[in-house]
Length: 149
Image (cartoon, rainbow, N blue to C red):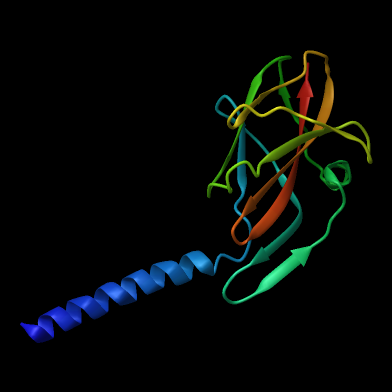
């Protein structure tokens, strides 16, 4: 009986240790899922820093307009005033998600997030957004573009 308990305890500890190690070994920040209804908006990772048990990395990139400019993707189209959701495959730290709408390569406006949602402008145009978030292991910025028409 004692041998059975020791074996079971060892198996549980190995399982818990493996789970924690796998979670800690994540090599990059969680990706956002940005959606307009059922349609996904492509997002590109920009500047980020991430640390795990095995390594730490920081990568500095251009601001969101610069990141979008080098992408060869057509922006998703949506109607004015449409609601957009931003979720991550791993929940960010409380109050760490920030959203900006870029006016040009150097200026941006803060966009109000209500929970994980925001509303597109009423004016037609192509808008570049940057969303940033932080986790215990680091932080990241993602850029995406939406055409309002």
